[in-house]
Length: 226
Image (cartoon, rainbow, N blue to C red):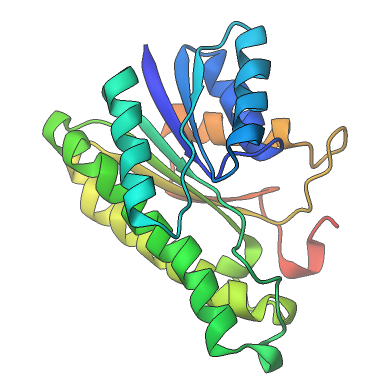
């Protein structure tokens, strides 16, 4: 079986991605810092017949994250897909006029440094096999300046830059890298249900037709679904 590692897994998008990939032949490795919540997700997935396991780690702690990925490799072997979609960090979204060194660095540490650390854990094996996929989920402030997302937008735009450059570097090596920017506030049971986002991600992964998209397609700051 193939394996997907979901960094920042939670009961919304992370769980929906786990269900989507899991019902399509993937084993699922879940990473986040709350072990109890991860165990509940694992129980739900196993109830659906999906092989899953929890690997608690704090993105801010390099040693914990490294240990989590080592645990995944020991249990499942090669990680075919890395999906990175953690929450923004320890500070809420802050208007640009209120950005401080502390809240900007915190978002950068979680979203950019956390992504780099995660990629470092899977890339050597992917390069050796000339196979694999790395998927980054962000918000629309990765593409557009959104004043209320001052601190988060700095980090997400940097993460998008990293993702696009990775795609350019790794596509010739047989590794698919993609970025999906969400222009929605996720609400189960609506047009912004996390299951629909998971479907969009799986379609991108299977087609490998483009390196970047938005959900919904064509969304802009003027048409964000609140």
